[in-house]
Length: 204
Image (tube, rainbow, N blue to C red; front, side, top):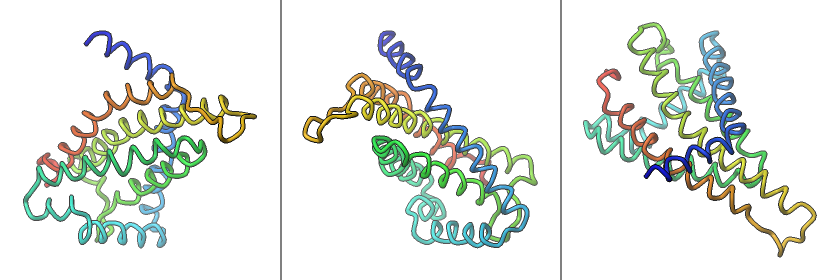
């Protein structure tokens, strides 16, 4: 167990530059979204309404939450974050540039939903504001870890294959191990984040 923990820490160290880069993108894009909706930007507000409205009617996690199936909602959210959000974007890291755009969009979405459907700020009341911030950070941490490791894999793989023919394409094995190690660490955080979001009484 100690050896595995040390291996995870070493993998995080290998990818820390890109993990931090992704986290900063989340922060900046989220802040941009917050500023836009709180300044009354019509595009941001209408897009937030669309996102929240679509989630309330089509997102299985939200639907189950409103039905009172809170743990099921957390499980659905967890699986979506892991398989659709994280693994997909980690894979996009092989294309190097794509995660910068997807995380910027994701962070911006997190920012514009800082107002509710009535366009009232979620940041006015301390409890609601703290809940909102904690949920974002709990999601950004594992996303930054996994997407950052995928980005590191993409960059090292690109350097490894630079000048090679397509049929000789290889994946950087050491970076791939880093990705796997980091996922072992990130998966429980994803689960905890979803549980906090859907099971916490702070959301009432």
